[in-house]
Image (tube, rainbow, N blue to C red; front, top):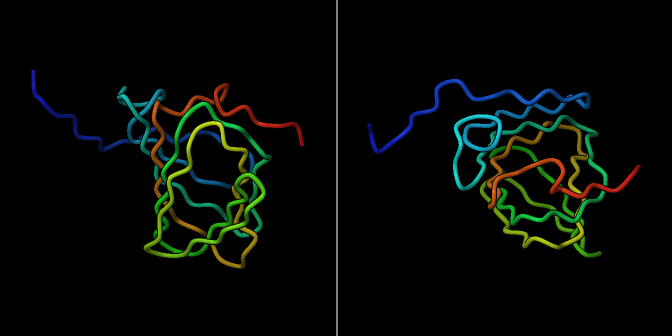
Length: 120
């Protein structure tokens, strides 16, 4: 058995909001102690507030992404990153006129039921 895994076919998570989610490692693809996903959020995209049971690191590649974290609003652009600790109340959004491409890493791995999303 090899001591590494190469991911050439990430799992494309079905969405109904126009967001592309390609999970390279995580619960839906190659199992790991974390999840790693490449994402592209279209202009005007947003998610409901949530209070996740996992830490999340986001690295922005292109565009801008808005974060509202425990009442603070931050906007990150290309080359910027953030770590958000589990238990924080957060909303992710791209209210801008261009797509936002980014990488997200969650530990432990992302699971929808552990995101604790609020109703719209």
